[in-house]
Image 1 (tube, rainbow, N blue to C red):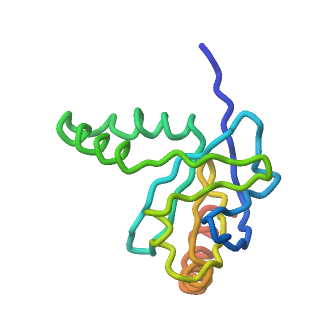
Image 2 (cartoon, one colour; image 1 turned 30 degrees about the vertical axis):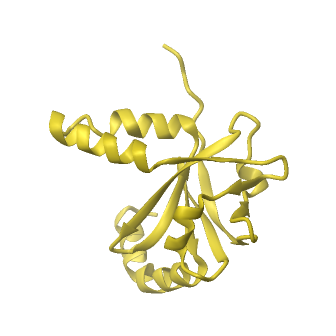
Image 3 (cartoon, helix red, strand yellow; image 1 turned 180 degrees about the vertical axis):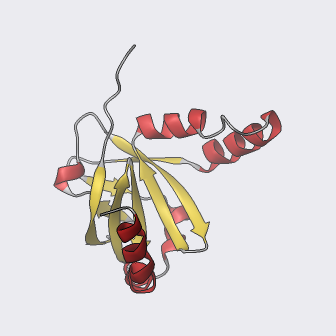
Length: 149
């Protein structure tokens, strides 16, 4: 059985979007084996953000995330997941080009934070991320305590 390398992203990195909607990927996250990332726009209870992921994670999510769904639910999820995803090239300077139609979810401010979230990267508006950290820090501490961390 073939083993696939798993990218693990961690940490938070403040960045500024340039006028072409590019953001520099931290050097510790870059790999010549990952020439692009796939972007999905998320609007959730905890805020609006972009999810970036390498192709192997994108493919895995498209396949594995529907295993416990009915055939109809799986079809609906796949349709939206693959239709909404956009491939974002990483240039030689390590900048990823974020899709024009997705950047609006981050707001008008060009200051963002890249978050390493395991096999994925989240792109947040910097002010929204700061507020979420303030709002969630107590519940995170309680969860960490219950997990023995």
